[in-house]
Image 1 (cartoon, rainbow over the protein chains, first blue to last red):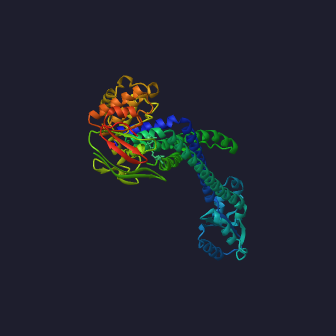
Image 2 (image 1 turned 60 degrees about the vertical axis):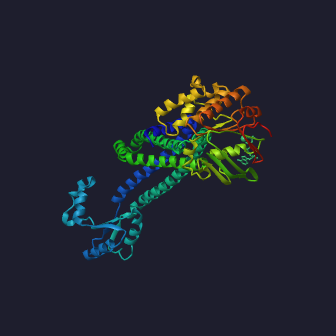
Image 3 (image 1 turned 90 degrees about the horizontal axis):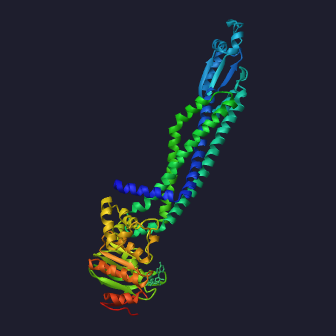
Length: 304
Length: 225
Ligand SMILES: Nc1ncnc2c1ncn2[C@@H]1O[C@H](COP(=O)(O)OP(=O)(O)OP(=O)(O)O)[C@@H](O)[C@H]1O
Ligand SMILES: [Mg+2]
């Protein structure tokens, strides 16, 4: 195909888009909405799973031992825990280490001097990290077994489990809702765009018939509709990315106020750090829907 | 140049063409006449490859166009010009643009278009109105533009299905005169018409059809049903 032919076909596509501008506008807006919804859910899941990851990383179960427990008991216990597949790491914290980290804490500084290292009241402990937050529950049950109770003073997980479970539940819920909404809107935009292209094919029926009769190259008949679909995708991506950027600028101060922390940097960093993947995802989805619908309509309504 | 052999076209229950056999030589002017529903338009659609025969062959320059693949169709269409009763011009394009459009969509260069379009418009006597829209033209003028568009690829065959059907007698005669002129330059012209006076005055070959059958084929005949 020559450059001249290409520009002529491209011009035909743009002319179509413009001639049916209200239809095109409707199709583009539905597509914009779809892309927005997909990106908002994708971003929310990304932010929350990042937060969960960092909390998860901090989240562990700490088993504090009675001073009566022997070193042998503790070592064998540690081996048993480490042998579990859902456990990522088990760390032994001695009385000395416990004292050091206690001294490093703000609240501990004042009382730390009162503690005699030889009469250290801080318990020895095992810090257990899980591979997945979801398995913390099983691990806790394992640790809470009766065989271990004589040497165990307290298991700290109990205090966190509600928060952990809520967070995990929320992420799972959000993912499900995200998939559902995205799916529904992808479906709606496919239906709207299929119909839009069908209508533009109908409004150009005479022109297509004439093109056929004068022996038009097939590209002239088909490609303009593909360009039209492509335009919906590209314009919708640009608009929805703009909305996303503006939305972030509105939401960030609100978040700062609500949480009493300055999030501006993190949000901007997050957005610019993930801009390419968000934009890339949008344009891929947009173009796939646009071109896919054009091809289907062409096959259905442009029979030779 | 054109040979139709045993062509039959069945539409559901209707036999629109019934075993048509026919040869047309280079440079001929052929009129097809017959009552409404005789199969004139169907025969023309066989030649323009808008429809394929149910059985039989349509040979153009020894090639059976009933067997054309869809990729080959555009190239065939450029070798035959087609003209219709309702002109089929694009209303939002000017006279010049309507004719140029036929070249544009066939990958012609800008130079070819600039060179060819004015010449063709001059041939049909529409150069002066090249910047008018079809709505600003009379029926006869619109048909001239549509003939210009049909001729723009320099086809070997020009096919016209009732080109004068919407025109008054004077305009009709001018269009027929134009077709005769085109024929004298060597193009085969095939004309389907109802108009008795025109056929009588052309004094060229006449094919009479009725109920899908070819009833008579006479040189220099008049119109008679
Ligand atoms: N697409 C179609 N489907 C079914 N039947 C058709 C179709 N096209 C034509 N026919 C039938 O084929 C027969 C021949 O039609 P055709 O249009 O060739 O007649 P015609 O000679 O051109 O008539 P007119 O002078 O009125 O234009 C008619 O009986 C018509 O009803
Ligand atoms: Mg007819």
